[in-house]
Length: 278
Ligand SMILES: [Fe+2]
Ligand SMILES: [Fe+2]
Image (cartoon, rainbow, N blue to C red; front, side):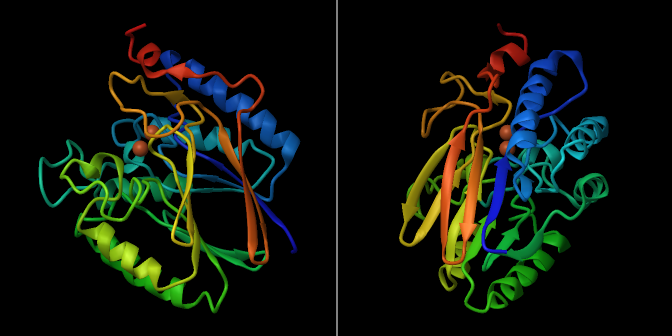
């Protein structure tokens, strides 16, 4: 295969409940766009469901909608699917990621980490929420990642995960609250060091609900927008562009292109309208 076309969607936050109908509508607009564009693969980089740990039905509903797409899909968990990362400093998250919720995600969506090759690239997907938990799947994933990176055999690597690694540089930001938005310390430093020893050209993430595209050293960092909704400035500072959409990639041996797209009819649903403030 000379060219591999991948569409990344993220933060769909799907639920069958009536008050989330606007998110389902946005997913249908994204589906229509995917049906017309027919990429080789769709990757949902997490927060597939509104709240998987308290309502497995949200994950099952999300799976049904993805299964109706005319394209193969791969999934990665988000904090709203399996719980969140503990951090070395500061308060524990209200619902830390754990083996039970990870297993529920795997039952509904399939593996929470994966690897495949296409168009001369090695693609790796990681579960970023188990990082810093110390649970056995975190240790297994770390060892698995080391072997997947060394097994790339000179192929460039494209990495997908829910949380971005960092804001602008690996040490940025440093404070305890980073676990909310980025891969938390201390695991981030280890991961960045490990990735830096290999030819990782792309790190594609979701989670922030703001799109962004920047390059640090020789790695391009692409933050997918949410396919579902944006978060008001009152709750979240602006660090990218607050607009819903999706990302289209074209991979060719030794090269790739990135394009942010808003599907026709996709609307910038505001979080306030979902939690009853507007
Ligand atoms: Fe999200
Ligand atoms: Fe998230």
